[in-house]
Amino acid sequence: MQYDYADNGTRGEVLAQVRRVVIKIGTRLLMDVKGQSPAERIRQLMKVVGELRQSGLEVVVVTSGAIGAGMELLKLRRRPKGMAALQALAAVGQCQLMTLYEEASSELGFHCGQLLLTAADLHDRSRHLRVAQCLNELLAREVLPVINENDSVCVDEIKVGDNDTLAALVAGMARADLTILLTTIDGMRERDETTGELGKRMSVVRELGSEIYNMAQGTDGNRFSVGGMITKLRAAAMVTRSGEPLIIAEGFDFAILPRIMAAEDVGTIFLPSRHRRMHARQRFLAFFSEPQGELIVDEGAAKALISQGRSLLPGGIVGLRGVFKAGDTVSIVNLARQEIARGTVNFSHEDVSRICGAKSGDLERLLDRPVNSQEVVHRDAMVLL
Image 1 (cartoon, rainbow, N blue to C red):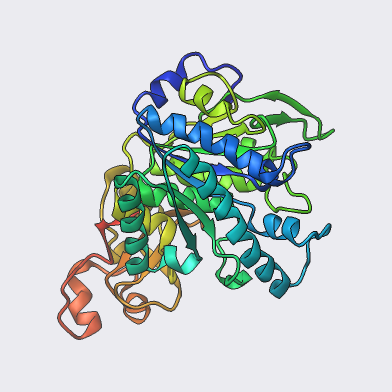
Image 2: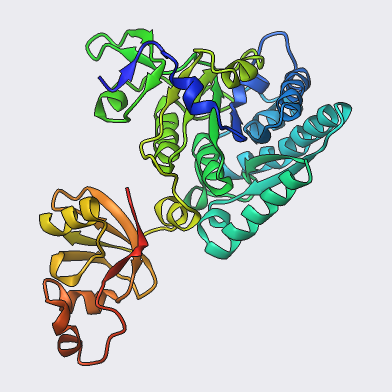
């Protein structure tokens, strides 16, 4: 199996060196807890976050709830469907949300810094670096970064889409040691594929394979929010492939956070899928830089990339898709069209189409010009997935 029901000391080993943590708070945990106002919920959260900070942790909060806060403030019972209405609610609600965060944190002796991000802020290299610098500066000044997607200006085509994904991307950008997704469920549970009934909680997920994805069940979406277990698994895939753990846990009681940090067997921990953490350039290639094309490689080339850490030479390429220029990011896929790597390509799509399958020594003859590189994608500009 790809998972275990009991922790058996795994968490203690994995969490021992955690110093920087990203915590994502689902909308329903702030806006939809019976008998408690959003202000009360945020005060409770900030109290626990303050305690974590005092213990020596650097904390980043990814918060949902702007649209939900706007609905509460404007007394709307149903979530609108129109984009303009949702953007307006986000504009109203984000002000309210950050007011509550700052009031609660300042009472405890620290301050919050707001970062509202779009997909373009993450995917454009220069903007990405500036956001990362700002984030690190806030942490250096002991300010709590509170991050949300900028829903008041985003449209579907440029949205990150959900805050589980946003939390994973922020964790990658911040090089967080741990990502925690707090939600309304107590972790990943088994599901009977025939009846759909949920079974035991998985304590430890060692590998995110088809067995786990097939059991993804339900959603925490309601009138305030979108999302569900499948978005959390996608976030877990990003984080664990970067070389860090991710935990999904129930967050109705924020006191679960110190319990998580004490390595108690709560929620579900997804273990890193690689022994060495990705460095910053690898992370950007893997999760932020959008591929402009696709290189299809044969079995020999795939093996050389994966098992031997080689560069991609033209002889191993059997086809390509897309329009790209030298310096663009491309996906490298095997014959089954499974993505095995991403990298920065040294040739345009026109050039690659002329040198597919060729020996490296023939490139200048085939292209009728001098070439600076015989590698189509150099291993130093590539990340395995």
